[in-house]
Each structure stands twice: as C-alpha cells, then as structure tokens.
Image (cartoon, rainbow, N blue to C red):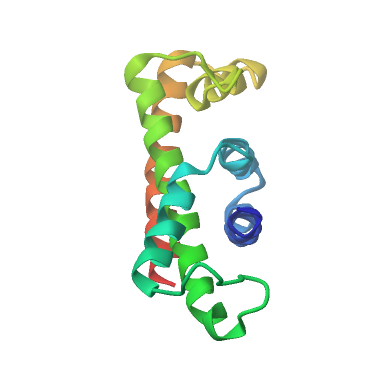
Length: 152
C-alpha cells in the first residue's frame, strides 16, 4: 500500500500549496490532514485493490511490478483507494467531534488541536467551540478533497 501513501502525499502537497497560497495560517489544516492520513492499516485501500483484482480477472500470477499492461488501470485504482482513505479521514474528524473524543491514534484529535491553537495564539472567545467548528470545516474540506481525487 506504499503506492497509496505516495499518492496521498502527492495530493496533499498540491492541496497544501493551495492552502498556503490563501494564508500561511492554514498550515494547521495541512498538518492535521497529514497526521490523519499517515500510516494506518489501509483496509479500505486493500478492499479497493482486491475488488479491482477480482473483477479485472488478472489471475493469480499477476505481478504488479512486472505487468505494464495493467499499470494505467492500477493508477486509477490507487487514486480511488487514496480517495477512500481521505473520505475515511473526514469521517474520523466528524466522528471525534460527535463523540467528543480527545485522542485519535494516541494524538490529539483535530478539534482538540484547533482548541489548543486557539489558546496558544491567545484568541478571545470560546476555545472548545472554535475547535469543534474548525474541525467540522476541516472534515468537510477532506470530504471535498476525497471527491476531487476520486474524479481525477
């Protein structure tokens, strides 16, 4: 599933550049997205790949590295698998808000990261409310990104 991580990293680099062009303050969205999408079991990506393999009828002797004829199809499958991972990350952000979970994979959840950012920068207002609102928008952005990558 290294191909999926490479695709995710490439896509996130593009999105990061777009975010930072808007404002350097949006680096926290990039950092949160990268933290959610780094590593993991990649079950969704594996299910996507094996589903493709099952219907493509490539046979048991198919070698990803040697069979160039399927490489074009494989690129599409990797993009779809990566978009599924982004979709799942969006769901995790929203789930952590609904469950009021402080941690995700042993790290502060996205809404807690934004809550801490609010405090660290000395902003006025409701830090927990800001954290939830910013995380909700981040989850929505990830959902849009998953659709964007899927459509490529």
